[in-house]
Every structure is written in C-alpha cells, then in structure tokens.
Image: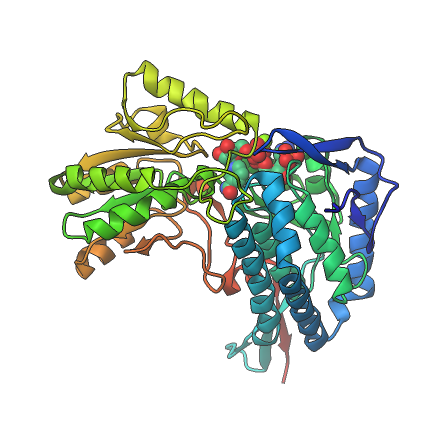
Length: 476
Ligand code: NAP
Ligand code: MG
C-alpha cells in the first residue's frame, strides 16, 4: 500500500517542505508504518498565500453551478476510493475497518449535501422603512484555516472543508499530527475532481509549532477547530487579536438518561456502543449514564451483558467493533483516570485493564455509582470508560446533568413524549436524541453549549458560519 508522504500545497504534493518527518505508528501493532514530512513556518506562509491567491483569482468568482459540479465530482471520486481511504485511516488511528468505510462514505455524503446547498443558499430582500430596495448577500470570507483532530479524521475534515468551499472560501486544512494521511488524500483527490490548485491546501505538522501562525496570519479570516477545550480556548484568545471569526467544536461529557418506562432492553443493548464506539474517543460519547432507580439493577445487568459481547481486536478484521486507543499517550490518560477511580475505591464492574499483548487496547470499562465530584464523572476521559448512577427525581437529575462545563450531546430514553420534550428543553446541550444515540446528521446543525464550543458544523448553519452577511440598499 502506498501512502502520501508530503504536504499538499498549490495543487501537488510538495517535496520542498522544510520540517522533520513524522513517523506514523499503527496503534494496533505499535509499529511504524509510514512517515510524513511536516511543514514549518515557510511552508505555512506559502500555503496561506497560495490559498489567498486562489480565492481572489479563481474560486470566489467561479459560477455557483460550476462550484457545485466540482463538489459533486469530489463526492464521486471519494466514493470510488472508499476502500483505499478507509484502509489508510484504519491503520493510522486503529479504527475498525467497517467503521472507517462508513466514515469515508459519510465524508462523500457531506460533499454531496453542500454541492446541493450551493444553489439553495442566498440572501433576503427586506422591506426597509424608508422605501427603496434592500437585500442581503452571503459572501465568502477568504482563507479559512480548518484544524481537525484524530478521532474522526476524515469526516471532520470533510464537514469543515465542504461547506467552506461551497460558500466560496479557500481552505488551509491542518490534520492532527498522528492522522494526516486521509486529509492528504482528500487534497489530491479534490484536484483530480477539478478543484483549482490552491483552493484546498493540506498541511501536516505540529499544532504546537504552526497553530499560532495559522490563527494569526492576516490572510486567514476564520479558524474552524475541532479538538480539546484547552486548545480551543487558546485559539479563541489569539483570534481575538485580529477579531478573527472562530468556530470551535470541543469536548463533552454527554448524559444518557434512562427513565423507568423506557424500553430497557433496547436502551441497555444500544448504549454500550454509544460510549465505547471509536474506543470512547468521541466527543459525543454518552459517558455519564443516569438511570431511574427502579430499573437500575435490570439496566446495569443488561448493559454489562451487552458490553461483554462487544468484539475487541484487530481493526483490519471485518467483525471488530472496538479497536485500540489511538496512542500510548491516550492510553496513559485513560489509565490515569482509572487509577483515580481505584484510589477512591469505586466499583468497577467490568473491564478496567489493558487488553491483549500488543497495541494500545483497553477493555470497555464500567464504573458504578461514582460521586458527582469524581474526576471520572466530571472530566472527559476520551477512552472506553462509562459511569452509571441512579436517580430518583427528574428535576434533581437534570440539575446533575447540567452541573458540567460541557454541553455537547445526550440521549433520553422514555415512552412519555411530554417528559421527553420537557427534559430535552432543559438539558443544556447542543444536540440531543430521544430513544436513539444518533447525534450527527449531515443536514442538521452539530455543536455545543457552554465549553463544548461555539458555532455549528453541518447543516445550513455551517454554511452560514463560513460567510459574511452584507446588506445592500438601493434608493428608489
Ligand atoms: P488537541 O491538542 O486539541 O488537537 C486537535 C487539533 O489541534 C490537532 O490538529 C492538533 O495538532 C491541533 N493543535 C494542538 N495544539 C494546537 C495549538 N496550540 N494551536 C492550534 N492547533 C493546535 O487534542 P489532543 O491533544 O489530540 O487530545 C487531547 C484531548 O482533547 C482528548 O483526550 C480529548 O479529551 C479532546 N479531544 C476532543 C476532540 C473532539 O472531537 N472534540 C477531538 C480530539 C481530542 P497536533 O496533532 O499536531 O497536536
Ligand atoms: Mg494536544
């Protein structure tokens, strides 16, 4: 299998990058399987200047119909390459191959949606009081810097790049250091699909080294970030200097609320994958389960049984549901949380240990009834660890749910529609699902309340976020 190994700048892989190569480690085997040249300051400048030129000289003035056609072509070429992109992704981050294929297909669907959105997105005419004629335009901003993480590298790259391009911007995409391959392929395949050179630049490199430059460069008009709350906060602080637009999709500690009248069988058997899927490295992971006390024992028993059936193992195997954590560092983070739970003598009723003899595997782990002040209850673990607590009273439970700096996602299980809607209105989070764990829909806005972020990915809301709103008045 061949791997892209150079930054993608001005329409081609460039061998002139000045940074050090970064070795990529397969987290299932702990072996180096590829190496990618990282960019340094000079390459970042070249890429941003190229993206600014591409914006002014071609992309912003290309007729919308042609822009849509190119985005459709990108979707088509992604669909033709699902297998090769999925294989790269699976090796890079240890993602089960079946999930990797679904995620590439999701990326293609995102391009299809925004290709269609180009012709359905515009301004308004407004009946202003002084008469005359008034209308608004949605105009592109210029160069957008998209900084993306390693947990869903391909779909998250697509759901920033596609709406930004659809709205007429050019994009400088920085993948996470440990997962640059699928982003590099996206750059190459986009050009093959007809995207003019420079409209999408892909810069593998260290966030710590080039992040500030991406945020502060005067030609970058907006930063769209997904990752940790800590880095997001730093980006927002820096962006304030140039009053840059930002959208931030950050961490979560999402609740999974189970009422006694719910279909307990369905809730309990569906819930393990809502937190252990992607080995828990999911900002939407339902890592705090709150169960009405009457059904606590029954729910926990079924939840444990369903967890024990999950297939852990080689990400390349079709049947695998749970792969390794992405890195030794991420496993160390999880083990640190487990050490704190053990030191407090918490009840660990399933898992809690490394799995297998090689690879960064960790067993799906269930902790019962931690205190609400515990780190494992309050902080994002980003690993396969769930906490389950019983509740008695609906209002107190909602207070407990909202007692968190985060507010990204969540689920509510009940057959009482009035209760479902009452609780959904009061839970402080950007995305909720009722009798389901589905959080991400290409057509619907995705993002967080509170410290889970700012702005929205996906849906038409994302496209608005990549435009400036201009008002034009014409006198009679
Ligand atoms: P992170 O540092 O926030 O990384 C996300 C992206 O930001 C990567 O591309 C990273 O590049 C880049 N970055 C890092 N420092 C930067 C800086 N100073 N300026 C600009 N960009 C910068 O996340 P992480 O360290 O990989 O993971 C830490 C924790 O963050 C996880 O345990 C989890 O809790 C959370 N997280 C959340 C999400 C999410 O989906 N919301 C995703 C990933 C992680 P490098 O890869 O080169 O550092
Ligand atoms: Mg980091």
